[in-house]
Every structure is written in structure tokens, then in C-alpha cells.
Image (cartoon, one colour):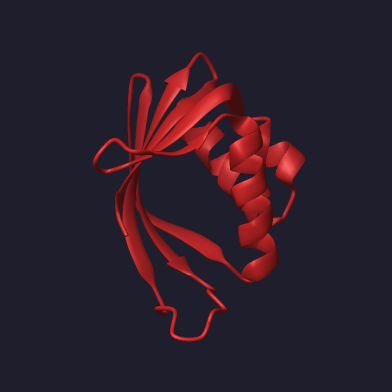
Length: 114
């Protein structure tokens, strides 16, 4: 499976609220960082906890990907995120995510933007 297909499969599983399938595309030691390099989630279990909470709090959350670039071990997505339920939450959150791979698994995600 190509890296771009792995990212899409993980997003599709997230939309289906299938945490096990979603996390099957992540390396056990996956790290999620913000634009400044601060670690937001360290390890697949931290990602699982965060995603589970997000799915519960925002059951209609959806990621549209208007642009995707794949180059070697990297996939870069422009994301438009909708479906937040918290009062006062924005209608759309726009971000760029850089996925880095180790083999066929996502080993690092850098989130650029809010």
C-alpha cells in the first residue's frame, strides 16, 4: 500500500469510528507534534486515548482533504475539519499535517496550524 493510501485508510477508519483499524496504520511509537516541535501525543496508546475522546465529544467530526502531496516517506495533507460540537467551536478548522512513515506505518505526524 502506498503511503498516501495508508493515510486515507487511517482517515476512513477514523470517520467510521473504528479505532483499532485506524491505529493499525500507526507505528507503536508514533509521535504527534505541533508546529513548534512540542510533543502532543507520544505513542499509539496516547493517540488512542485522544482519538477516543475526540470521537465521543465530536461524533460528526469529518476531515476533508482538498490537497495531498506524497513524496518518499512523507505525505502532506491540507485538512478542513468540520463537525465540532462544543459551543463556540469554529465551523471549520484548517491545518496542514505532515505524516512521516517507517515502512508502511505512520511514525510521526506534525500538525501545522490550529
